[in-house]
Image (cartoon, rainbow, N blue to C red; front, side, top):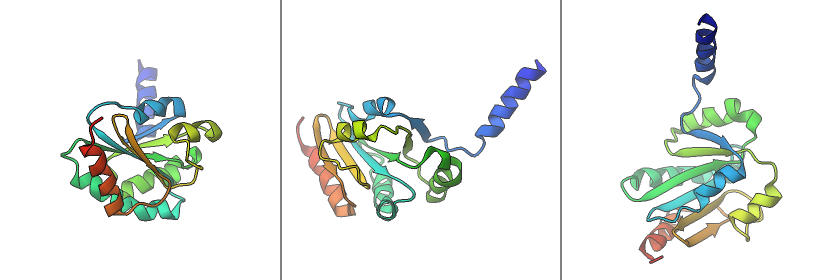
Length: 161
């Protein structure tokens, strides 16, 4: 019994401070997030803490995520950070930026496979954003302004699928 309690305590301590919104997964696990065919608009941003343009556009995404939280819009941030930097870079960044939306660390080294699965036009550069509702989608491999992102979201929300 003492051994079980000690193991549980060690697990709890090891998890202390980890973001509750951070999930680590491979592309096969991520793929269902890219194909939800319902009445919600999804904004999936591919980024990394080491990418300056990604960090510069992040406040726009966080502002809109907060402003649109009562709408049927879901923001998901897919980090392409290195798994060995979860504790030293990614989690502290999430906490500092107060990111409340879901963050997924894509831990899949076979990028030649999954980049074209996300969008056939994607070269792999970040930031990159997939915005979709039902079967309608828009993909941008660029930094998005608030106006650009809001225009895409509103266009998709108003289209019939």
